[in-house]
Image (cartoon, rainbow, N blue to C red; front, top):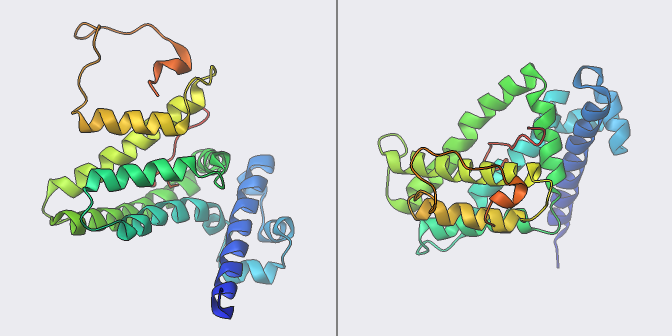
Length: 233
């Protein structure tokens, strides 16, 4: 049974999420410059005072989804068995995040597009990205007995995994044929990384493959690490 304190925390988290997504929806519909704290609060069904209890400004509200997605990686990695190989842990997390039926990837893409279209938001996101990726890097370093400040491994691993997830989701978004699922693309991306990215068979060195549409990918919170796919690409 959930305690009263736990219920309050869940309610606060739900309100914060609702405000964040309301800010994204309004920004997408009307342009970010036209969005106000009053409008966000009204869209989420709360008072403006409640909005300011959760966010200092509309920029924080829009970036909330990205921050939550990135922190989720950190928390989920800390929760994985300490004896599990780091690649297995990260693969498990990535697959479960994109395959979660309760998660709408369209929310992630909507937030990403809004942020990329606004220089001020993009600058704030880059600042957030530095601190959030370091937290994940520290968790990887802790699991692998390395040092985030002196060893390449945790830094390379988090960048490789973030890039793999972003690439997989971008292929899924731009593939009009719909031949692959996010999960299948993420699995393929991790398989290729762990194999050392061998050159695809049947292609000569330096050759350019013929376009094949979405089926070219063999088989994708947050936030993406903090790297977000460009759905409109």
